[in-house]
Length: 399
Image (cartoon, rainbow, N blue to C red):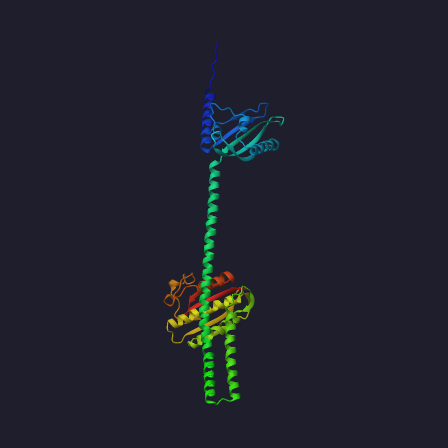
């Protein structure tokens, strides 16, 4: 007697199982991803997937994974962490994760990422730990390289920032030298008339004394005139010194006061060059800002307008200064009739060391520093456009 049984379905199932296992092994090999389990019996048998042997650098034909062997890969600190995470997985019943480092027998350091979870019997007693192991050495190496690159980049950024700070110091120093030159030029102009008057008075007195025609009262009167001239010279020095002080102190001041402060310095020289000044003040609001620095910005713009008017030989040179405001900001406009600025230069005009006055040893420092003062120190905006045959510089300060 015999029986015949159709086992086609069983054979197909076994074949599919073999294919699935092959796919799993290939997937583990590609991802450097292994799986394992530890039986919670008296011996604590371990079972590794094929990829586990390659991750740990062992030969699957000769190496038998045991807890004792496994512990040799770990430092005392990592071994302690491993015991703690296993205990946590047994108690929580959840999947627990741990990253650690191993030292293989061939001396290679490998970084491992693992997940583990406890399996329980029908009575809720844990029977084994199962888990996955992922080789993240390349990831850690990439992280180390990125960190190193970031540190290098940070160091390079610091170096470049230091260079920019040094350049900014040089820029400020050069700007101060230019201001000193302009200041001396304006002082010389304002001193010329009083000095000429003092010279004429002393010559007159010397001549009268030589001729024996001097009278005490007349002599005293002329001496008093000289004293008045000297006081005027002294006051001029004080005005200029206060104007050009680099005070890093805010003050409550109106734009009109700043304009008047500036014109008290610049107007005599402008008048001597037949430049007419027109003012239109419609904003009387006070603002807390760096008044002295803003006044120097105004002076720099006016001096640029003066140079443009003289260079272009404008027959009736004029400068208009206007203030106004809206709900958000205060505005100060300085306009001239010198012909305006070439459109191609608008983007460059505020750049450091760019100048349209190279034939006059222009340095390009003034407008760059002016923009720095307005936008970085005073948190405003400095912009320029052409209008009616002239350039219009606008300072916008937030309320």
